[in-house]
Length: 239
Image 1 (tube, rainbow, N blue to C red):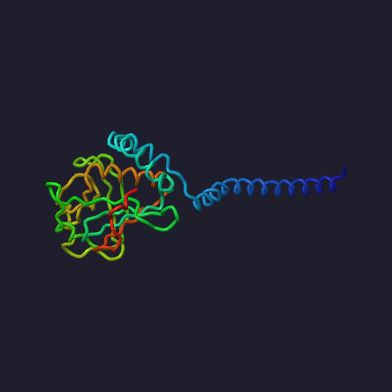
Image 2: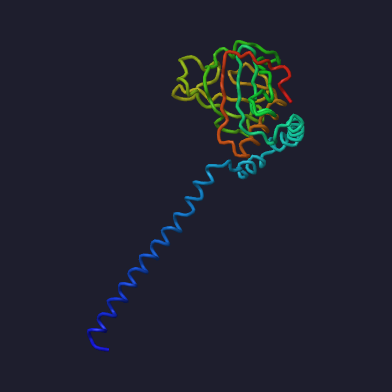
């Protein structure tokens, strides 16, 4: 082979090598990008949060609540033609009636009251209306789960409202943290005129299981609405 032909062959080989390198780099980049495309597609569908449920079940209070309430709730919901675990849940607090409602889709798909809990605002188990008056009406959402509430075993915190900032003095009797910021509004067991929302110990076990199972089944946010009142009667709302 002459020197001219040898040089030409080397140029062709170099060009082919460059193209191969480009293809290799492109292939590697596509491989790196592929999982993100898959994750983006997955985000369009509800994804079960099994790790959340497993972490919750590490706590004795949650184990007791599940053991005591889940079978009853499953039977009641399935008996009404509502899938279990129920998702698409929303909470509604009616201040003038002292009721916390769990709303969701009924058998026909229309929004309905799935469960209703009487708010217990008196230390002796009575329903004193005054502590609820200071609650700011508006749109909130469940912020955190507390499987070890030191006072009442189980609790969830409510963040917000997003409609408007709370006016001064609208935090009821909840204690203020350093700097004047109030403690978070809690939904918890027991009965007390504390400025929090108390549904009794049995009620809190039931509510906690409902919210935990909805979250573990893929519901990303549970809205909470605090209203002065609503026409929907609470009687007969529980399945």
